[in-house]
Image (cartoon, rainbow over all chains, first blue to last red; front, top):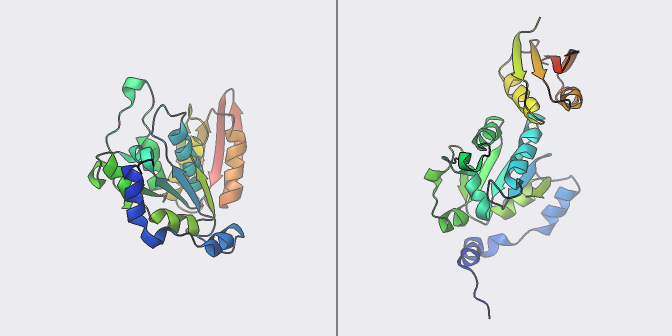
Length: 154
Length: 74
């Protein structure tokens, strides 16, 4: 029997019963009768820089949504947490720094949430992140999914 | 005459819209922002953004590659 990876075990411990999705809430959300207005949840699971531009695309989508005065939350899972690291410098790769886009997202009123177990596995803490980024247990994913009208994963 | 000029030349979609949204937040209702852009997508994005947010596109001009939009804050 395959061993369960440490990160998955940690996520399961973080969740407990709270990771059970309330389907009635999801149904209300998809029918447009629940959730946070027209808020969009953007889930980023891939590392920043050199990953088919997933992180770059995610933040551009988010900033465009916020610019149109709608609400957006960026949820960072797995390697996605690298996106909010305070001192990132991709210049050796010849790529533009994404930090300015992260700052735009926060300035326009977006919320960025990094999953605590994903940070811990990568040796990161909240101190390593851009000011204004929230750190939350994995179980927050369920609440965020239930409370946003739309979700998109990169 | 605009109350402020925002130079977004060389920026690609959606950055001109993002920069405009940020600037408009600190402007007063009735003030006009003059946006400069070179990305042709702005020809669609700026009018759409105005319709969506309730701000008014007063006029727009094109001088070679330079696009100028005059947007009044609602």
